[in-house]
Structures are given as structure tokens and as C-alpha cells.
Length: 343
Ligand SMILES: [Zn+2]
Ligand SMILES: [Zn+2]
Image 1 (cartoon, rainbow, N blue to C red):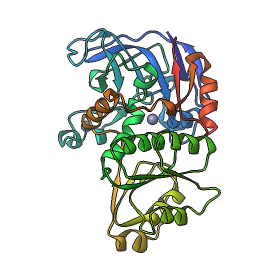
Image 2: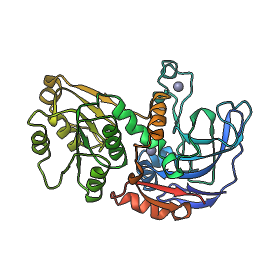
Image 3: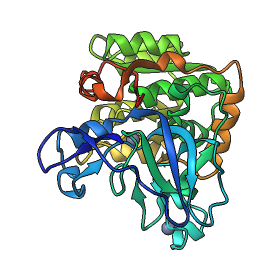
Image 4: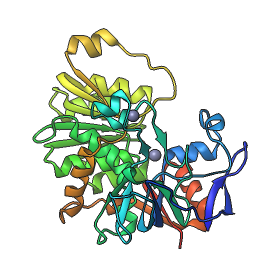
């Protein structure tokens, strides 16, 4: 089968001809209809740490996909041949203290699709059955493949108050854009997004932000305060993974508010801890992965609601053979979600 893999310890991926894998006990073979590109894949492409040492080559990349079950291994009960599925990227063990406490997304023995096992930039993939979720075959593949990434945002928004609240979203990459769409759908009173890229500012407005602050041309803290009559926001989502966004987000958060953090800053973060955190009596809530199965149930509801639409966030579609173009677009930092199709 055709696949895109990291084949050596240097930069870049290669289109390879790999054997179609065979599902063993508890595993499932899925024929991939669409796979989407994550920022992590770009870091792997660039051979950035920790991926330069973590990934054993050759490794097929990609951890977001949708497809149809083609073959099941011995004992598989969760799905059957012909089912349309999407995937959880976190392969949890089911036996550790976190899994037993109902927190498989923070499993102590976690493995990841497209990192520790072969991934979804391919015509087929084999995964353990418990990472698959049945989805409606009516969902277009370019939307169904988004579950893994979209789930991060759904978890972020679901982890705090939304209805009737004023919410600031820092960072309008795909996860920020998804969060805007979900918060809007769940009845946020006012959504103030912050971005520095024209394409993202336009998309943010399109999916439901009432105001998008251009961080390069405006004083972010002053503008958000103005938009909230000086009160600040009830909740802020940190979707950028940057020191600046965390600092500014905490400054525009009202006392008693909630900071919900999904972004991953690459270095240590320095904050006015007393003034901006403790003395404001705020809640800090960190988000990792998706709650299993809670976030998946929420996504199912959202995707069956005809009034909910995230299709504008998919800005680019490529054939799998054109993976170099897909990575280029992602690197530009100006895209929404980039989706590839193996056929
Ligand atoms: Zn990812
Ligand atoms: Zn576990």
C-alpha cells in the first residue's frame, strides 16, 4: 500500500510502498478515506525535539483519520466490517491507576498512533479496537477525520461555563477556530478572539467570533477590556501555546473566572502569579486529549446537529501523494485544517 513515512533520522517524509498490515487479536484493519494533518506532524517533519529521538524509523506518520473497517482480528467486538470509524490517537492500556480511575486520556502507559505505531498517512491502518469510534457514514470524510483534533477543542469548551458567558479565545489555528464554533453553538454571549493572521481573523469571524482582535495592530488587553466594559471575560481559552497569550489571557480574565489551557508552550512560562492568578481567585483548568468517551459523545451530538458547521475550517485538501504541499501549507501558519485523501 501507499504510505507516507519518516524513513530516517533526518528531516522530511517519504512516499513509500509498505505492506498492507494484518490485524492481530484485538486489532482492526481500516481502509482510510481521509487523514488530516496536525501541527505535531509538521514538528516530526522538521525533526524537532522530542520527535527526533522518540520516533523509531521507518514510521508511517499521521494520527487523525476516518475510514471503513475492512477486516477485524480475533475477539474484536467494538466494530464490524463495513463500519465507518474515526479514531482516538491515545492508545491507553486500560490497567494503570489513571485508566482505572476513568481517565484513560492520561494513561500512564500511553502510546500514540503515528508515533509509537504506524499512522494514518496511508491507504490502510491497523489499530487496537478500543481507539476506534463508530461515526455516521453520512459525515463527509473531510469532516469525519477531524474528530481527534476537534475533540481537543470540544473538551476545552466543555470543561468550563459557556452559556451566557463572555469568552476570549487566544490563537485561531484549527483548535482555536473549532473552539469558537463550539462556544458559539453552546450559547456563549460574546466571543472575543485574538489572532495575528489575516486568514485566521477572517475565519474566526466566519465561524462565530463577535470580535477578533489583531494582536499585531492593537493593544490586546485594552481592547478586550473595552469590549467587556472593563470587567474582563468569564473564561479564556489558551489555544496558542505562547507566553504572551497566557499572560494577556490572565490579565483580561475577571476575578473568579476560568483559564482553560490547551496550548503547549515550548519553554518555561513566567507570570505575575500573585497579581494575575492568586489574588484574582481564578480557576486554572488544563486540557489534554479528549475525555473518553464523554468528549466523543459530545462530538456525536454536535455532528448530528444540522445547525452546527465547521466545514469552513477545512481550508485545504490534497491527495496523499501531494503530502509535501500539505506540509508546506501547514508550515505557512495561514491555513485552517489540511486534509489528505489516499485515493
Ligand atoms: Zn495532533
Ligand atoms: Zn493506562
